[in-house]
Image 1 (cartoon, one colour):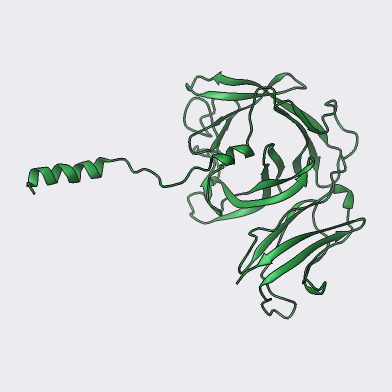
Image 2: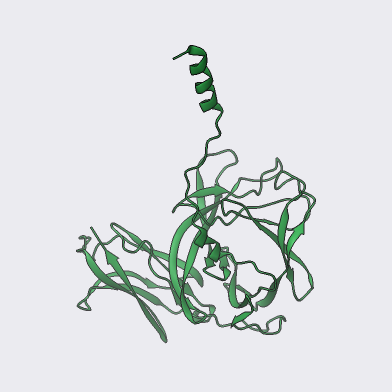
Length: 323
C-alpha cells in the first residue's frame, strides 16, 4: 500500500471522535417525567419529629430559553407562584438543574448547572456533581447510582432508582466517602425521596402526571405536626443475587425510639439470619445480607423471605439467591 495513503488512513482514524459504546435505554426517561401541567406535592420533614411543611411544584413552561442558549423545563413553587427550579435532559439522559442565576463558584457558564441525577449509568457509577467547583469552595460533591428496586405506592408496584451522595474527604484527594444521604426517583413520578441523612428529608405525597391525580394534593400550607409517612420495605437489590444483596426500608417519624427487626427465613419458615434488631434513625436505611446464616455458613441457592417487623407493622419481600 502506498505510504501516503496509509498515512492518511491512520490520520483519519486518530482524528475520528471516539463514540461511546454506552447503550441508551429510552425507558429510563420514565423516571423523570416532565410535562406541561405536571405537579408534585412534597412533605419536608425532620428526623427529630419537628413540625414540617408541604410544597407543591408545577411545570409551567417546557421551553424556557436562558442566557446560556439552552432550553429548560421550568417548575414553579405554586405557593409563591415563583421560579423553583429549571431542568433540562441531555442526550445521555443526564438531568441538569439550575436556579436561573449566575454563580461563578459552582459551575462554568453564565447559568449555573448541577448534575445530580443520571438515568443511564451502570450500577455503582460515580460522578462529580457540577457543584463546589470554584476556587472558594470545599471538596467536590459526588453522586453514586445504587441500582433499581421496587415499591408499592400510589396504587401500583413501581420501580425506584436509588442514588447516594458523597464527597472527597480532602480537596484534591482522590479518595471519597459517602454521607448516608439517600435519593430516589420513582418510575413515572420523578423524585420520590431525598434525605440528607442528618436532619431533614423530602417525601413525595401526591402528584398530577399527564392530568391523572395520585395520592394527596392538599392545600399548601405550613404543617403544625409531622405527617405520618408510613413504613416502606423496598425490594432487595440485586435480586436475584449471588454473594450479597442490600435491603432498603423507610422508617417513619412516628416510630420514635421503638425497635424494629429485619430477619431472613427459608421456604420452611425457619429463621436463618437476624440482620438487625434495634433502633434506627427515621428515614431510608440500608442493611446488607451476605448470604450466610447465623453460623456464618453460606446458605444454599433458593428462595428466601426477608421480613421487616415493627409495632403494628410487618412486611415481607422474596429474595432469590443463585450460586
